[in-house]
Amino acid sequence: MAQLIATVSNPEYAFVVIDTVTHELTRVHSSPELLKFESHEDENIAYPHRPFGITWRDGEILICNRKVIWRFDRQYMYLGFLHMGLTPNPQQMVARDGRLWIATPRLNSFTFIGREGRKHFCPITKGGSVVDPPQDVSGSNDINHYTSLLFTNDCAYFLAHNKDHDSGSEILCFGYQNDPLELTYLRSYLMGKKAHGISVDEKNRVATISADDMVLIRSDGLGVEIPTSDNTFARGLALSKDSYYVASFPAHQTIYRGGKADVCIDAFDSETLEYTARWILPDVGAVNDLRLLDEFDYAHYVQPLE
Image 1: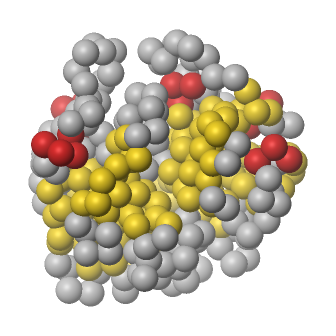
Image 2: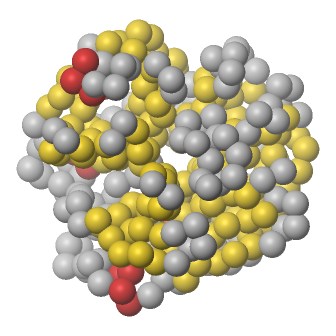
């Protein structure tokens, strides 16, 4: 068993950590310092406070929250922020090769920030292209609703939620050799609807969560229904060598926008997808992102945090 870190919609918390052995839940509280850059001036912004993507580098936990990236140490003490000038509603984030990659659906692209400065990659063209981002960040350009990304040893995976497309969600795979300007399209996977999260195991089996169907599905054709009550949404996927971890919560707009609700995290055997365990996180609201902290996470491919 392991430690899981999750960003949640309850504005009282920057993130929470659940120990799957002891069931101890650590709540890392927000503060005026954390929220100082949040603005309510844009009425089109549905989530004025929405910590989402989680990654780490150089011993620091990084949490993406709209316009800035919060920094915490391993003891969950706040260290400051990176003022990235991000657009509203950024989603999953990954640190890779000295860059931060962030899903930015309002720009219909993935933003990467590093030695090249700030660039934007649009994978849906199949060939993939670095693009100039649209100036309108109101959401009108959010065509494919990119939510998730994953870099393995030699591939990059990008998930298009495709919220307005009957064809469902698509995961696009590119060959990757440390240069974001030379990504080479390889293949795509049509998997579920309103999908969130990407994992790739040691057998190169791709998995994601189909939130519309409440199913964890894998590219070898195996899938399992996420045990839950009615009117529930699933988001948050982690994968250890032994288990998939999936988060789910009540599907109410008030929950997404800062309400309180209990979250379920369910575990499934990594080979058979047999249901094995459940943990309840009371009053934390919707889960935005989920990572394994102290074991290798095949849905993150960043070494465990020391």
